[in-house]
Image: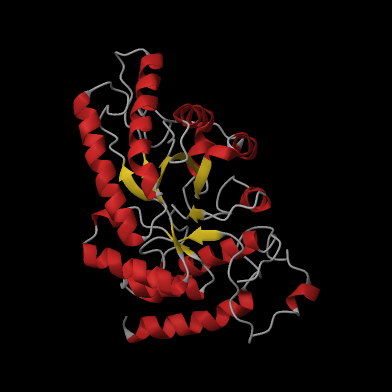
Length: 324
């Protein structure tokens, strides 16, 4: 980390303790905190942990923390985050994986789901094919090895494209059967596969899995504790909306969340999703897993990083407080 990054980080750490839960650069929200409540905040107050385990990803705070992954994780912890999110950790060198895992363990931070299988170009899970099953078996074995190395609880799976020449019900049956096989492989290790439905309107046309109700049906049919859902609020706002009712209906099968506002896929408060109420429902449900911050920033540089943290503080400040 260079000297300027270190100075910026120290300066922001001091300021963050004051602005924790304070105002946000968003229309109509600057005066949301009462003067009486503001007086209770002191410059000497430590930055409090967030009530939910929001998980930043590599590079999200590089202007404050520098290029070092370990420094970025430490900065996130200093800002109150208690989880980390790295989609590509499976592809990193083993030594780097181990260093990241050690840093997270040292700081008491959880690791969100990493990508195990997400080939958007292939018809894989929808087929009844031995070559597909052999490929998936190999991937599951590698996933378990990675999960053990990095202390991961969840691995993300996207079932791939649908087949235009095969009846939908046959495809659904094949997906369920292939997932039963995969779940059977990883279940004894404690690893949980989380299925991610993705929107077909803006980002990923042609994929088999698109909605929460569909994912719920698949998980119930697989009937394994090793097969659950990662609910991506950005994708589901585009696909079907109705975020809280769908979350509630599928709650027993949801193991993780992805965050991103719509339109734009930036931090909360930049789009149409009422993340204060969404987070409130997740918190009320007693959720103790990871909410991966799979989004960009509405502003660049250090100011964009500050605004992002303030957005999460604003949303999290309305939740009942918990102790670290």
